[in-house]
Length: 132
Figure 1 (cartoon, one colour):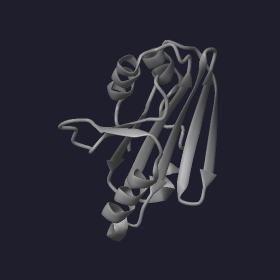
Figure 2 (cartoon, one colour):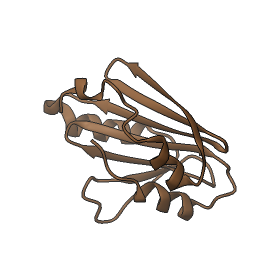
Figure 3 (cartoon, helix red, strand yellow):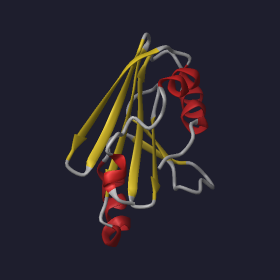
Figure 4 (cartoon, helix red, strand yellow):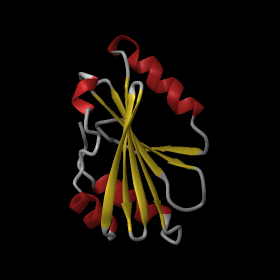
């Protein structure tokens, strides 16, 4: 995928994110840093951050393996996921969803009320449509 397609990384609508997580999204903040694009969806009970990291297709598998190895926390593969999704847990609650599409790694990081269980957060993250 051409990284230029991520010129506006706020691909999800405020309504999509709000409905999935049961919050009202007030603002979106797009950001671009080299080969990484991202968007923060800020709401009344927290925020959601989505990062897109474009890789050279020739080195994609090596880059993905290296990134996964370097990330902190406990990592759990989602069995049978077509995009090789895995959860990254850096605390006892929450968790981040990671997956790969085309030559892009996607990270979805909820930063919300920590009272929700890992299973509930994972279910919400997995229910989001996959992009790009």
